[in-house]
Length: 202
Image (cartoon, rainbow, N blue to C red; front, side, top):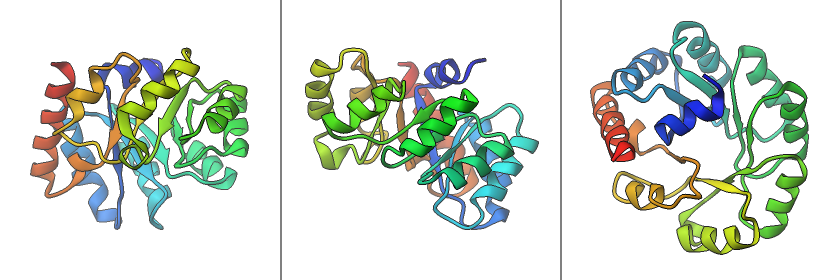
């Protein structure tokens, strides 16, 4: 299935931080067992590249992307391992250009009209709105959507099982990103992923 369609099927993109390689397999398996086979593995730790490689090679049923990508070098490494989408906390023109070259979805972070206009110039019509709760959440996105009707949003930051349904109820939400379901033991991760899927489906 095409990447964007795969994400839209689930409507939730888990933001995954691995601090050690021995966490990778148990947590990815828990996500799959919980019915949420999408992982945005972040470049916040030294083992991110190895984690992406393991995910791609050993969990073919998962859609694996790279997150917290802040430069072309990281994006090239992630794409070399087989990442299917790239996410940044802000909007990187060099990363956007690389993703366009490779035909890979790029979800760059934007919170201002100027940043969104830059994203549109690079052909990006799905905007990561981050950090969502700090910049006004739904109210701000709705104001921005009035000026940019062709854009949809992937809000991240401050979203949890408590407000997931509220965000997904708005038709301009492409999907939501968050890490709330990744906290705890593999069994807890499985349960939280299953809960997120159930909320999204409802």
